[in-house]
Image (cartoon, rainbow over all chains, first blue to last red; front, side, top):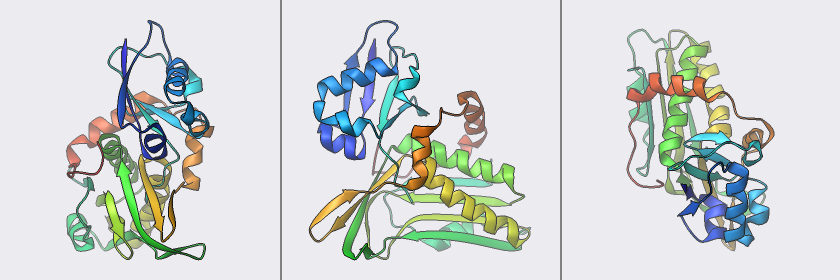
Length: 83
Length: 174
């Protein structure tokens, strides 16, 4: 399945990309995606410890192992600083 | 709902626009909060702030927030606007306006809404000094890491009710 990943703020700067598509096997969950993201961008390893995901615009923590499906959009959400 | 207006925009924010949007014949009070770029942080001179948003989700979260205000307090109308892109010293980055029959409701609602916005709306700012820059972090947003997410179905129902109230401004994020 294909998962579209969006990068924001510090994660965008460190990864050097705005968005990217990852190919994952059937049954993959958010923690599997996190591992792939870090494999693709080792420099994100420490940054990701402070981030959560937004799966189709709802917050989830990668470690909650939310199931993914083809076409999902996952945004990397560093600590917020709106306001 | 017609009594909610939210936007994420790269245009400068004009508070009179949002005061007008929440004006209501039944309102005896209009309370507003304006967040502006301050010229210093811990003794260092701040030049500007650059904001970016996950715009579709930010708009959705602002609409949820405005909808929660109407559920929690007896208010007439709610307007919330957040700017993206460069915001210079003295310029507003966020404006919240709430009208209500009596002052207490709108004052409390505005206070709650800005705290909640900082905790839950996917927007980020980078602070630029004369000699560098740093991504800011809201203390309030740490709860995203600490808590399992709230029930998605409830949030989705709130969005469905609030969806017609919003309009996305151009530019800034995606």
